[in-house]
Length: 366
Length: 233
Image (cartoon, rainbow over the protein chains, first blue to last red):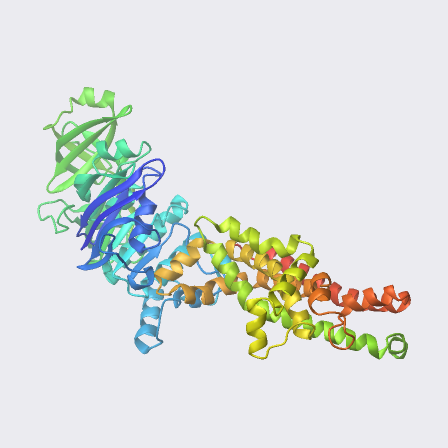
């Protein structure tokens, strides 16, 4: 639980943020220069600001009472946008930098963290020999082994190309699920936010534009108002219930977006099979909104493996296209279609349609 | 070797020995002060920084005799500082300590400037991240700043040492030119040339050239390796 009431004069605006965050992972989105990085630096104690801030009831900033806890006493981990590894130390020394007393427990923690992030083989290397993704994971490990009470991540995937981005995201999801450290995650990628976060904050010019559960905050209208180049993806969390190695597919029982519980009446989805998929294992997939097909009636003889009925709950025009939001047994889907298609199919809020998604439109994130 | 030893007289070697002793002591004396000043200046964001830096640079640009006369005044028995030192039994004027003091004051700016640049080249995010990992400012200095800046500091130390070795103007004013006690290389060259022993003076020039060349060469090597080092992130 983190409570913030912070003011800081910046150019060309001032940062004024009032927030109460209870989520495990809070995504902070906003245009470049909206104050996202400054906000993290203030929370970490690396930038002075006026106001109050408490973490789990412990006050670490109260400018009126003259309380300004030094960064080293806040127990808040910080991973900046560039990994900022210490160039004179090898990977092992980097990871152990914040470990005070060498003990069996701390050694075990380092080993476990290296295993979690799959960097055990890098320990003798020096930072300049690491790839971007490796350096990012080492920076994450370095913060994690200090067992911070809160982890601040500043666009950890921004410097990576799209391919690498999708390889790192699963590690972040593991950190969320296994290390169980609350995170504040700055990103400008809606897909990442939907995959990782349960709460979201939209910042614009130093002010909080919206805050709350991620599904409610990251509505297309709000997000495009902040980022013109935003893309809309469907993120499906679920549990694998069957694997068909011969067909190269697996069945996924989806979880509801809001409560993350099994959606009992939702049709299982056919997704691509792959390494490490076992019945019972949790999995997260991404489907681009352009890849969700809408049909007026139940189709006959269609190659797409996932076809189910859905009701339109929202129609929003974005630039030249239309984003249609659909509800289907506690799941929400977003389909990006042309304005002409909307006219032809007479799509309005309340329309009953069928949704079709090809197996290979599901891309595994973690 | 026999030829060399014939060419160099015992006198030359004792002058060289004294000069090295003075320059080395002066450099060691300013090392902690210089590094501390450089670190404070590098992290100082407030006003007044430029003024303090300018004042610290003065010995580099003023005539050394000007610095010498200021030191002479401060250390004289007519001045409070001189009286206090004399009361506790510390004699500085016209001893080798005066030569050390003059060299130290004159070479401090070189060390501060080199070390400050080296500290400023460190990615500030490294220092910030080290704080969030539990280190206070002093530990960050020792574990991150010093190891990353050491080449620049070492280069500054070598330059300061060379400057101390060649110090003349301030030294002659407060240390005098006493053979065997305060007569360093620079003073001896001047003295020999004044009394018409140009050949003897040139032998000293050759000696000091050799030492200075070695130091400057080492400085350049440090600079090159620093340039070739992997970037900070």
